[in-house]
Amino acid sequence: MADRDPEVIKQEIAAARDRLASTVDLLAERANPQRVAEDAKAKALGFVNQPKVKAALAGVGALTFLGMLRRLRRR
Image (cartoon, rainbow, N blue to C red; front, side, top):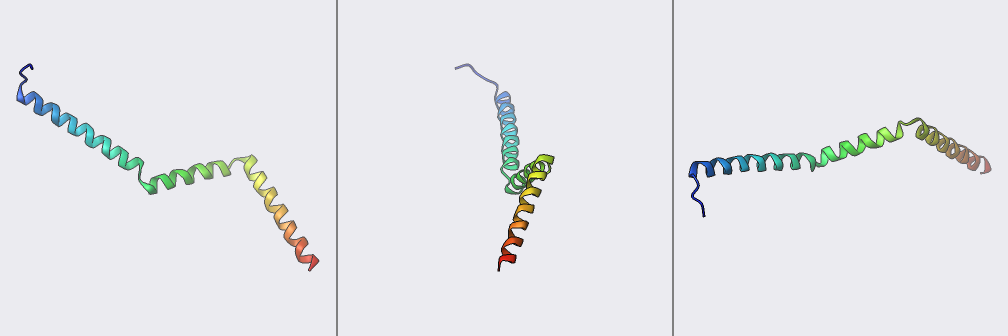
């Protein structure tokens, strides 16, 4: 085994520790439940705000409303 300078080894260990800490912080941020929920909400709102989706939802709402009116009139 080659002899290595202890100071170089200490510097390598410190650098590895810093990289590991950075990676752990990044993973903790990505796995944060609040952040995951906010991302899901943003994606859902982005999908719903598309013109085609808005039109489809309006149509479903109108049909539901008309169906309820029809049931109420039959009573």
